Image (cartoon, rainbow, N blue to C red; front, side, top):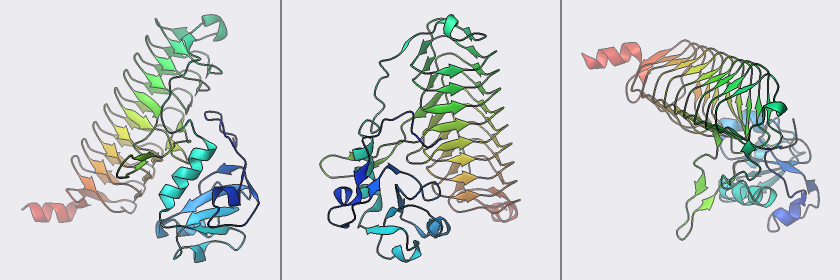
Length: 320
């Protein structure tokens, strides 16, 4: 789905209007997307060599980047070289999506009417926004809020006191009481007088058979999406920052925290109160011990523990 249904765009903008000091091009930029999703009429960004493999293949018409990174972009992509990629990205995104810098209240909310959602059961005082879709045989608990354009599949169990916005929920998904799904992430540019909020225009995708524990918080993506793969279970009070992607069949214990843009493979298990730093790649079949602090990539089929997290044999050797 190429159109952003959650946030209304003010675009398109000509590239030289967005970046008058860096470009003379008058091509129309219709949207802002990640390196791998961008098309010819889109603007993207590239700030780290970690994403070199995506930069080399991007189809974007223009890319905000640094002088030392522009050589990795295709010739078809105009490099917009700046000092601070994220700051310029935030300013450009604010022009396209000025209402994505905060979670403004959804004024379209109204008490759910059973006649609009055949086959769905509602508790008391459920509020639903415009264009919400809920599959048959789902149940929504009391005092839950589903904001505009949220999609929920069939056979879902959504508990009480839950907030869901900017999200696509698959089939047979369970979300326990008090969870918050699709809210804005903790993203801003620190400035001396007034911090500049980074708009978050992505969404949350929960695939089929996912379970979310009580009081979990799952932030929507900033430019891309936050994704939880099929049959992955989260225990209570897990926090996922913007753009985190978790694979299939993962088990995440209570109070685990994920910083932004980290990626987990399939069949990953993480013990309680572990922390995963941002922009990391955790492979398939990885096990992370409780209380561990993950600060670097972990290859497939590895067991780690400790702070910083190291292979289990190394951890046990140091503990003797």
